[in-house]
Image (tube, rainbow, N blue to C red; front, side, top):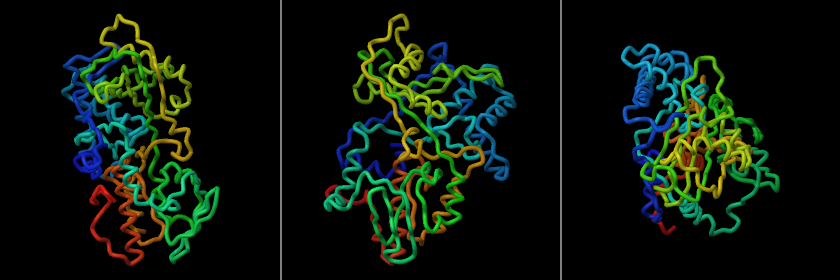
Length: 404
């Protein structure tokens, strides 16, 4: 769970007895040469850049958008007070944001940079299952309420009762309204046809917002060989001269964030996060290829570098970029030239329609996150209450008692 200070789902953790761990302890930083020292200040310079770029576009809202990479390179080149080493390493430290937004700083928008949130984040042991199952419980009382395993192909919608017709690969359903919650990647690829077409302003918003690809690799060993007392390990690739292509054959050419699942849950596992375009390659590899590719990173994380790595028990990866129902990616991101406000404003403009959209891409606060997507479902529901002339009682899902 991200942004826990403003995340309504947090209140469900004690209600549902969900075990959790705040994974915001002090991380360790690594480079190709091993663990960085306590005076590694490049990360602070990167943070200073993030503060500066936000200020710059606040002061110059009409300034052209640029990539984060070009912007941070200019920032460090003109900074009068940083060392030569910091000038080289700060752009590399900025790459840590790739593991938040799901795309490389070469493509990410500087104008709309979503840098690191100051709010705390937590790890839920067991995932979101308890929340999903609890939320669905009232609906599951009717066995015909939820239809799983049906792929929607066409949606006909209108302005009157029974004017909505949803066609799937298995059948046809008639309704008074529809809330479309497929990922942005599905909408961008036009995997569902709409009749009449989606309102022009909403389609423009969809086309003005990109879809990223965060990837995760879970690795289980027979022994813990990494530092046990730190939540995360940040790896920054070495600086290379401008114009020099990166060595795509080495994981050490890419920024990674590795979570220590031992401290969170007692399992002898690591979770490594990668961003596109590496994600697409990682999710296409078989298990043997994965281990060989990541082995140099594992060796850097050893607390006793002279020892061989312990036995590998299991290695798994996400497959979101191969999954059409996930939109061939993970969640929305603003790349150079994008503007997410266009879609959010267009959805609000059409809040009186019987065609509603929801999902992490339909909100500015919490976009890319579960709680953001959850909030958009409630917004769409409130919109339809208005369409049907019904009063909203002021309650929402998380405000109910635990026993539906």
